[in-house]
Image: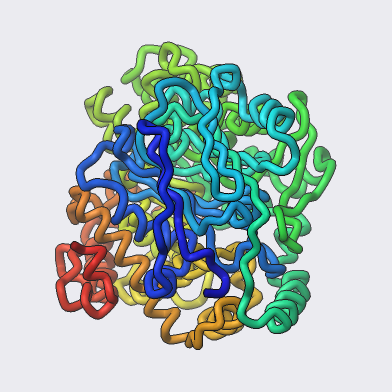
Length: 597
């Protein structure tokens, strides 16, 4: 078998044991790797109905056939589990040397179950497992723990670890490596519930590819194209360039989605950040794009992306650059998802201004309270203990009309896209298996194209939304960076050629289209198994009953009836029934019988 080891490691922390299990070629070809393979393994290894923080809940790290090849952006890994934030399937991706070391350790995936009796470190070295004490690492920040592990284990090992937020079971805690994060949905809390501070991997095992010369040729061509105009934005300004663009389109969520433009956006713009604070530009492991922009702040150097900038800035009414940079650095060190952290604080601020929470400091624009609350959230101290639960659980506890403006779908907080101003994206949020998410659905691409009217959603966009979701599923399973999507003229055909050169399989574009549909549907089947119903595919009442107040999107509204028409069109485009359920003939046609069972 080329491109794979053909096996995964199942670790039971309660027993302190590990077992190698086969991954047949037929399974790998159906699910590829990354998010696809992780979804398959969750169906197999995580018992139905088990709570996300229960010992029996499975935490899956999955690699892909492209990891370890010279193909640019391929050094990525996926992590998946049942989310403690949404109670549904959650997957997250990170670029890092951890993926390369994991492949050399001899596995295509790791499945971790059980719970350690004390804080521990899981070490995988050339396929051998060792559980080591990690009490001295517990309560350390991400950066401090990473430095201690590097000194303890040496340069051979790469570690994925959690910060204090994961240890305290904050429902949106992250898993980190080298200041890169598998961020959304609380995977760090799942790891913390197992008293597992870190997973360290190393090895010397090499996987052969089917056509070595062909892979090198394809890698050179892909690297050359990665320097082109499709990725220029990421090299020049990074994703922070989105802030002014979204503000111009009046689609920038501000003050907990009460407004859609931010008067102080210019002070936080990518242009201002790069002129005043940028000190370096870096690349992820095995990447030629170089999208990572590093900025100087009072607390040291900070990597900043649009989503962190929006969530810790305009969403909280903060226009001060220093505060945003410090807040982003705090989230990185504490192990907090910046989107959920910012959204939860913004929601608390609105509750404070409405008198639903009796804390006078909860006011939009209060820089000090943002920094203070981030620390309290990570420690579950005082008000932070409530905020650590995420906006859905907060709203349920606060009561009144709080659920109407809690900014989440299925429990996952909305990213920086105003759904009333980007109504194809609103559909993507509503039906997403992970919840409100911009990485598993690229429906915003439809809103910014000439294929739809972004202020007046239509059932006609459902098919296009399905296509963006399928493309994302394929990219996340191969795994490649989504910033490369613009360099492909035909993603499926070109991906088939790359995969064929690595694996030796006679893959076709149509096979990969079917694979993408299979992976999306497998995620849906997991959620159905865990209690999903069609009532979850919606948006908070605010977005369905209040028009936008500002700019060129003023007056835009997304009525419930329009959203439901779009959702029904989406279900039909996926060949699901009117309740969003997957029928037996489709399960069989997509070769998902074993998963559905």
